[in-house]
Image (tube, rainbow, N blue to C red; front, side, top):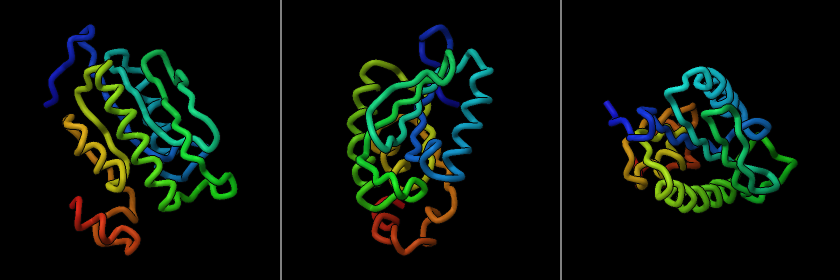
Length: 153
């Protein structure tokens, strides 16, 4: 079990998902509904780092949940598809942004959606983590991730 941080006995969770409505599809919706349920648990503090199609911003989803939208210079015509360029941009921005957040907050757990790139980022952050595989990111399933599967899994 993850250790509890000393901030009022609340568990602090960092979530990584490059999809969040209106971007993406099923995993974005899964994050939305998970956060909606987690907002009922006042002993949780959650930061989700996700993508934005246009600008950086931080929004309060609930009293205990913040969503950090990082601009990945996404082409607005393809909101439900992440190009390799989008994934690389997200990876670089999120890794450095998450490291900065870790200096400000102590996370008990990182929940990463998708093995590539979020699972790899979680591995590098040095926080206990879980990875939710969502379909085509299952190792060996998608030729697009063949090299990444070998490197990270």
